[in-house]
Structure formats: structure tokens, C-alpha cells
Length: 404
Image (tube, rainbow, N blue to C red; front, top):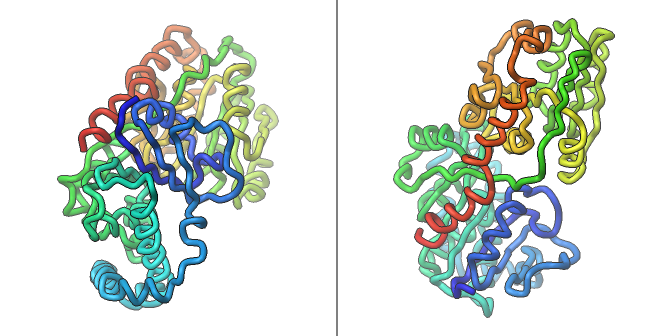
């Protein structure tokens, strides 16, 4: 087994679900590294079944029993320097100062974690250090780099940790510090990389590295001209714009069954709005489901379309997953969606589309090629070439982790 050690920083993995991407990536990481040390923000019972060369530490365990006051005094100059640098980056001094206590606490915890991690028996300064997110973990790695305890590190950015316009006063806490000390910053789409290059001075550090999904089967599509099955899968929150799916379906005259997987605080409002749908449209809100429940559905129930009408995305993983089953996509060109949704895989809509114009894909379904077996095979082939975990992750490990 290769001798290289990887320090992998996660939010939930492997304690709980929620980081599907890492679950797909981890088998390839496990094979490529002689030892893996996972630092996870999640707590709770240690999962069973981890390979022998994988060690797991929770963030709470690293911070437990530490004298924060003594750490603060020890690192006062460095902490003050970073906070002052971040203050200059925020367009509203008032906003920054109103959050100063929280920022100071986050930064102090990062100094404590950096100290504890550097004393772990598995620690090596030339190990590979990789955070899946630009968050407190990336900040801890920035502290380790600033202190010259590690040779380098890299992290991924997705959407929320990249797009300034999503944040009050266009300020993402400690983003500047993390960009400054990282060796490589990986975007999940080329569109995100374009945004990065236009927005940040550290664009020379950035590159695109797609996320991949595993092979889980093929949707058993049998063209049924009496009923079109439409699936969506997302949190029920404003940027997902589920109301627009209802507006599309209000203009549909054929029979459609719409099935939504996912939950969120707008659920009751969306369900109430769905009462306006005509009798030819039936719907089923399945709520939050596990990935395996969703995939069981895809592999056993015929689906005509998967739909996503978000107004903001990184690279929508639910679309990648639907493509892996050969399901045609209807989606808005938000974020990197256009890199998945092309003429080979479905229909790309403008973000400000007119719902009545989208209804034609249902009303005139028989005239389109979406039901054809060869088209659906083509979707799967496109996914295999571009977003299959078995192609994406070995390349990522070789090009980015082992040679960064």
C-alpha cells in the first residue's frame, strides 16, 4: 500500500449521511493512501466498518478540555493580525464588528485544532491535507500553513462558499485568509472557475475538478403515453423555486405525476400552492429520504423527466445522479448546470424561463426523442465519460492530491 498519509477534513462523513460526494470519493482515496486521518465536525458513535488504515477524530474531541484563555493569550498577535486583515475585506465595518465575537471564537478554535492536530501521532508535515469545504477546517489548515507546520493544503469550493452575492455585505468569513494560505482551490464546475477568476486575486491557485457519482443501475423506462412521470429532488427552500414547477404543470393538459424528494421550511407553502394544479396533474411529496431509497426508486420506477429550476447552483449533484440512471433532464442554466445538461442529456432553460413555454415538453411529449431508448442510453454514456466516480476520482487523486 502507498506510504502517503492523507488528512481529510469533513463536516459529517463518516458519522452520518449528508456528504454524498465524499461517500463516492472515499473508496478511491482509501485505495490511494497508506493512511487516512479523518477530522470530522460530526460527533457521536464511531462508525463501524472503516478500513484498518483509516483513523477518525471528531472536532469536539480535539477541542475538549482545552484552556481557551491560555491559547488566546499565546496566539493573541496572530489572531489579531488575521482579524485585522479580514476586517479590511468586509465592506461594512459595523457588520464585521457586530460578528466579531463569533469570528474570534471560530479563529481561536482553529488555533487550538491546529495545535492538537500537529501533535497527533499520525501527523507529518509532508502529508496531504485536504478539506472538502471552505469552512472552519480550511481555516485550521490556514493556521497550520501560517505557522509553517505543513507544506501545503487544498480545499474544494461549491456554491455557498464561493458566491459573494449570497452573503450579507458580500463577505464570507475568513475566505480571504483561506485563499491566501491554500496551495490549490478546486471549483466543482467550469462556470464556478470563471466566477472565481473574475472575482478573486488568487485565481492562479484555482482549477476545476468535477464530482462523480457511482454506478447504481439504469432507470427501467417504458414509454407510457398515458402518464408522464416527473421527478424533482431538493430542499424546499426559495432558491430551488418549486413554485415554478407548479406553474409549468398548471399549463400541462396531459396526465403527469410529479414526485418530489426532499424537505424544507417552505414545504407547507408549496403544498398549499400545489392545490391549484388541475385534475390531470397528481403529485406526491415524499419528504426527506436516504440516498439508497432514492436510488431504489430510480432503479425500479419509470421516470420520464428529472427537473431542477434553481436560480443558483454550484454543480447540481442531483442532476448528475439522475443522468447516471439515464433519465432526461429539464433544468435552468444556473451555475455549472450547462456542463451537464446539453442536447445529449435534456433541455437547458434560461433562468428567467416562461413556465407556459416549458409545458410543451409534456403536452407534445410524443413528438420528442426523450422517450427513445437510444437517447436515454446516450445520457448514461455522457455521464460515464464526464461524471462517473471511477473516472473522475482516480484522475483527481493523481493530478491534484498526489502532485499538488
